[in-house]
Amino acid sequence: AVLAPEGALLTLRARYPGSDLAYTGVTLAAVTGGTVKLAPPGVLVEGATEVLLLTRVRRHTGELDTVVESRALRDLLDGAPYAAPYDDLLARHLTRHRTAYDRVTLDLAADPAERALPGSALLARPGGPALLERLFAAGRYHLLSASGLLPPRLTGLWTGDWDTAWSGAFTTNANLNLQTASAAAAALPEVTEAHAALVHRQLPDWRDNAREIFGARGVVAPSHTDGECGHTYHFSREYPLHLWTAGADWLLKPLVDHDETRGVHDPRTTAALAEVALFYEDFLHRADEHGHLVVVPSYSPENRPAGASWGALNAAMDLSAARHALLTAADRHPEHADRWRALADRLPAHRVNADGALAEWAWPGLADTYDHRHLSHLYGVWPLDEINPYDTPGLARAAHRALTLRGAENDSAHGHLHHALVAARLRDGAGVGHALGQVLGGDYFHASLMSAHYPRRDVYNADAAHAL
Image 1 (cartoon, helix red, strand yellow):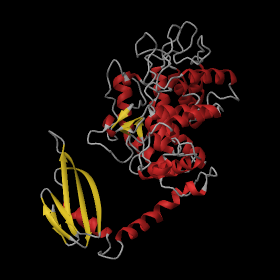
Image 2: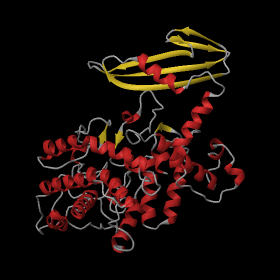
Image 3: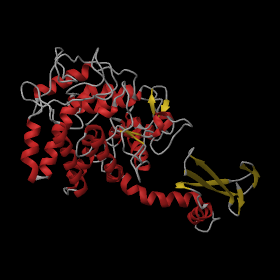
Image 4: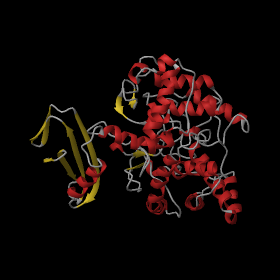
């Protein structure tokens, strides 16, 4: 820390052990009134009427020129001191942010008196529409704020902890997908652009995954990434995430939706879809006695058949993802359409189990494990529309039965909201209401209206705030 004309300048650097990789935070403390003195390792401000903290964090190798960073922060003050630097900075932010923020609003005809209450007061009234309106607006704000160079992490753009759960990274087998689910429908192309940046910068690593793990062309997405590397690293018996092949389809689905809302095909998405189809061409080469293709190995995140291992065959999610990926790629690439559609036609149908429910694994002898936070087997209902009450009423009834039988396991917020999205696709309003009620009444939200992963605000996590 050093004293500066504005007040003080503070820097904090962290370097990874055994590496030249580091990150440095530079904070300019602009102080109005009072006194500022050094109090190593920081500063002590006393008697001030206002303290404005401007912070930048840079990732780098070697040393960072903190003088350059401090000048950039000073430029933000536009020749301060002046009467209200915070108000001016806020006004500058609002000009850029409001355009995106005001594209969509939610009006549930809440009581104007309740709408005037602060968020912390509304949280004490979980049954009122004003809370839902506020959470919708706050969620859009958080989602926009956390989407820039990359989409939101498990913790959004923030951490909330010195030892962040799941490394505060990206989990792509439900969490990131749920957080960004509203982008197309709620007019947030900024979120999709951030999502696309994550996908396209990692495609070379996805090719490595396909080649090194499966000996195939094309791409396979990881189920967890730090945002920099797209290689698969989770090799374990209990969580064999290296066996999961549906990730590329799910991560490309928002980009396909974005193209459909614009009416224009992004050539990068079109090219990536072809690479997914190429993977399935090489991967789907085993067949059963009826000539149907067999997806093996197959993994349904993050569940396993009752009494069996996690690595299995013909997970419903894998069947839906393979079919969707091949047909979508065929639509974009007419020169390969016949071949890819023929491959999709050879995939087996979904299985309905003895309980009348859509089975999580379409293979005889693999029994369902119902009490689980994930709903991977209903991927064909949401985010896809392969299964719906209008075109496939029989499968829709089986999917609804599967949804009804599904437990909440550990009450993860993403599980409840995933349940709500699937119920909405199946036109089950009561199911949607019940799932939302579990989240609204479970004390998942902080006073900031950012959320937690578990009830009673346990484990800081952005899933509920962004997905709701």
